[in-house]
Image (tube, rainbow over all chains, first blue to last red; front, side, top):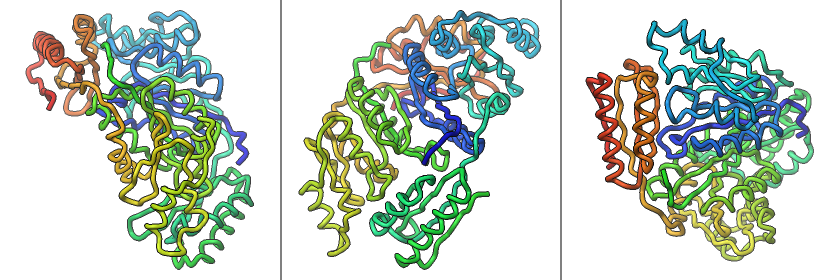
Length: 251
Length: 251
């Protein structure tokens, strides 16, 4: 499939994800939002709470995709090192910034904005704030890197604030066909259908419950190309004896 | 924290994860298994079903960690390109191998082992099979790269078969303390506690439901060092007014 849509990458910063203590939910959230906007998520990485690892991931990805998102490590504690690491990746200074400080001052009762909480107003030079209506401590965008919180509902709020900064593409339309035909039975024909429709990406995902079979997912930003591929897939499944095909067309 | 344990990385191969259609469950499963074995998962990546992306991830990670695991893309369909991509990463030939073919021949009824299914017997030269008691099609280990299926219960079965090929380390012990003290209140003291216990990694994870507070997770392979850090954390939380600390010591 040719794909001229904007591209993105995700960096999850989290020892707790790598130890298995928590499951990352932000990648899936981001993936669904970006897919709807016609932005292709090209890669997602989970890296530890270590400056060198974060710097390397940011610099390895920011020149290769249009947008990089990070999740995690922007709170007030000693293990929150994302803002400093992103500043280091870009080689720019970082310090407490007036507008970010003002947001926190307005939020905390007098006397509660201590040194640790002020760390959340540390913003790299040249960054734009990403506002956080939920818990106030902002994220920021530095060039094409969007630095956001790890707590899922805050991540989602920050994404909403960041959305106007993103340029979407042609939304990818997905059409799925679930049929009681095993992958191994259809694979040869399926490969031929895929080859006949180069503008459509066709994935196959087997299922093992409620019988044996596979869900085929055809994706393309081009509706006519998608419909032609789906017609071809439907004919193939019928020819292979599928008596029931459950289809989910694009919304 | 000094960490001399064996290290690992995970590569999830899956357009369906990057589009948000499915959530990857294998990274969390692997992370928990490895943590129990004293192997540190250092990075996890999700890459698309594209040969160049797979080759780059495999070659970028296999020299940096002791073990690399891949999940996905070893079925019979056209989008299953992991085995060929891993062979390409190592620069070794790949073809249908007798022992893998024999496993499939014993499994499928006569006549059902077609060309497409035979693709699942394509094994790179020099690889060792990872047996799959569930659905038979094997994974394989090529040097330090373990190639496994994406379907979660098959991934788990293959991991069991691969387990004897792994050398564990000192299991990391984790001790968590959940207390109604906000991160911003404790952050300064917490940073000092963390600095006093360099052999222990201390993470802080805020919670917003059932009141406001944070769960502190201390981790170390050294039980005495861990206990000393936890004692220090407990004293700090009490000093900061925590009237209830819920602790989960290592098993």
